[in-house]
Length: 127
Image (tube, rainbow, N blue to C red):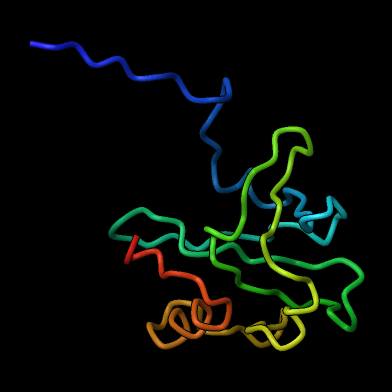
């Protein structure tokens, strides 16, 4: 019987609790800070992260608006200590969003599909 060697994760601490993800900086592909992760939405059955809720800095009129972005569009950057979003910040102008006073129903199948369709991302349940 052949032995299989599993490589250790690339970092000393590859896992992070959801409460520590909240507040983590988000950068654009050029390395400019664009905001932070406010929260994450996790599929109760599969345990997969569906999307991050972003709070943007200095985005035209974003104020207290929050943007659900498919999790797979964020990559953690060890040197920056934050996530790099593979989306154009200008694309967020008409993106699905909600305010602190009017909550978007993020859990409905229709809204989940709307968020993934808007960004042209493959839904997490198909990965």
